[in-house]
Image (cartoon, rainbow, N blue to C red):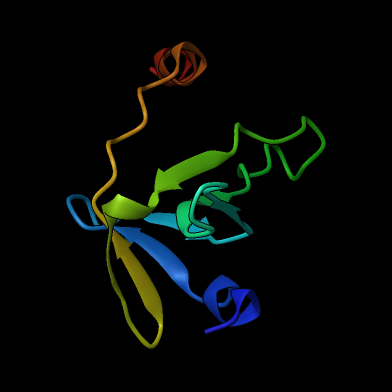
Length: 92
């Protein structure tokens, strides 16, 4: 499988069913040249005008299966950001 083929697949969190995005890059271990983590670029904020969120790095051990359309991962969930909580407060 090539990086291009892997980047065509959605990365799905097993516990929540959340679509985390698509693989943009791989990180390799220098000792044995094996894949150590998947790197997903951060999602754009307000159509990209306000930059992007932080990149998401998923350890290779968290990858549970790679199917025809998706990569299933069991990665720890990202913490809720203070800005996100503030916006939900404004909607009330």
